[in-house]
Image 1 (cartoon, one colour):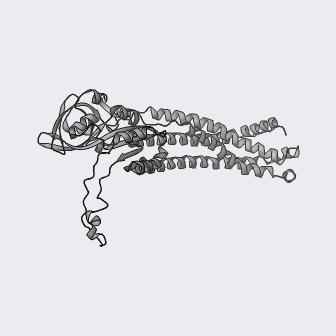
Image 2: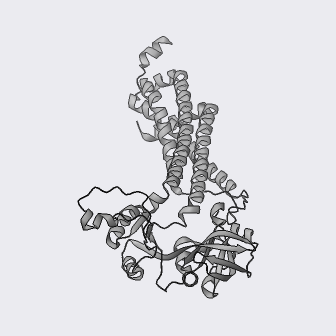
Image 3: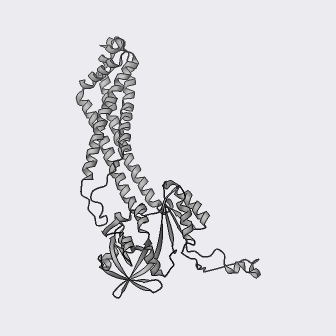
Length: 419
């Protein structure tokens, strides 16, 4: 039979029981709406939470780990070489935190096509002097331009300007929690004491808030030149080389490669933040599972409605087959009915999901821990809409397949004789 006629018959059967059809379509619409909304919100939340750490974390970090010497003096002494050594209470050696020949290493790394950019860094433990109290803190010496370009430094500035670290001599940006402890506003001076006992006065040019309260109570930032001056080190003194890659999945491989080439400790982002990746994966899986469960439940509703329709339309099916419609034609009619429900329910669900996501995106979300976030996070990734639309059609097709197959096998002679 012609496709046009089959479509007309499917439409007539669909509208003959329009109330049940509407209920089935509403089930699909609700499922798709919740699937899109839940996934958009959960992935948006994942992106926000992971960004608090991952945006500020290098894909590969090169540094010198402080560890005990693997070879102790007694092991290389000629008179004890053949003896069995029992060494206790081994202390870390005088290993240097400075990266030797750091400029040559950075020049070599930046030429690699897989590297997006590098940012040198110095980590220094200090004490912030507040009257008679000494507050433990950490000063990070950074290249402001590189940190802004690769690690979104300015996005976390809640007061002041990041460029002032470079333009104002002996300046510092305090973590928001640390600034609150010191009662140090922008433009005021703070006094720091280094581990070597040297004291310096630095001008506060901004406040920084990462969203991680414990970090913001201790961390602060200054230019590399300022920290080198604090520590009394030369202009090439660097303790960390932070590397951003064009493809983050290459981080473990490149960490091993750079560590071997430069004889240095290397840590990749996957190793450093494995807990965050695990949490993200689990939350995403839960979101998909809930959304797919809703679609499956809607599919069972369509299956039941089509089953009831077949029992109620036995006469119509028998007449169709008696007038020349084949079992394949009947099968196509009921598959079209199921796909019609899935298509219109799915389209409406995608639209409702987008509107509901947009509504959530406008709800105010104010927290002191995340001053740059003003509304609930939503991820409008088109792939979620493609998955939702495709799955709505697949679910309804599968729900209609068995009833359609049953309808195609009905013997019109048996039905008519029974009547």
